[in-house]
View: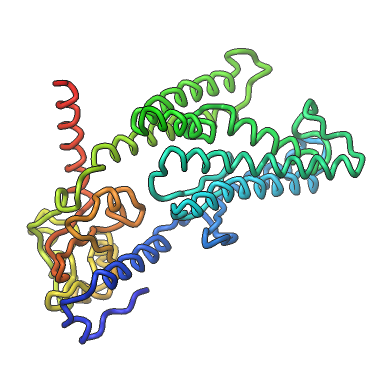
Length: 403
């Protein structure tokens, strides 16, 4: 948790841009750590990237280990499933390490029963996205080549691809699983899976990322619908697979979400922070109590309040923090005991999308806007940001209709 500034620091109104940037970055890092899902467990960190297991992963491992659905035995099946998720983690690391190399921060990797998700910040250019998308399946291909060599050296011929996935020894299972992961992810153009991202990146080079996203998302939703129908057995009971239905649902909604994100990026790509910031706002003092904060909350339409000492920002009291504190603390307690100290700062001329689309931006707490001297001149809140986006989208739609 960040320390409060010293009295000397409070009187210094002429902080350099580098100091404010460092403070913003530190706040972003700590905010990212504090907003992680309680339903996931960190199991490793590679190249600064936390790798997490979602709690549903353990349920699947237990179910597979106890279920009599294979020819490996319980121990063999458990080892095979753990090995499979290790390969999925390597797949996501392939994406993440290439993204890092190209300059895109990676927040974390989370492993779910149906696969992994690497949270890559920023919006990669089409050529960069192509490299990032191909990296994951390439890792699975390399693993499959290595396993094939090991199986050939040991004389185990039970790794034939025509054999049922759950038959054979764990190494043979992992060989077939990695071949399927590489082929399924790369060859099926179901956005936002890897194949769909390759499609979007390729289209984006020629027609721009916005139009490419809409086309790839549409194709992805059609394929997702087909997956669901096939999994339900519409095209024959022999193809029935409930897991395919789950993947189809995931792909359908993920494609819709990606399309919405890209639409948002297109709408605000040329906008500055000052366009969406609130200029008329109330503040709290470090000496104010929760009672005073409650009065301000009820008397105004404001949800979150900067906490200041003199004219220096010390933190932000969010509505959520206030209500949570009122449930456990006396209303005579000071706001400094419950306020958010990890504040994200911005300048009026900064690009707006840097703060609207980041997990540690306005989705976590208000972004405070300061001028060149460090004076607080505005805030970007989630409510105001959403109103700004709606107005921009309506305006863009009206202009497109007139054209």
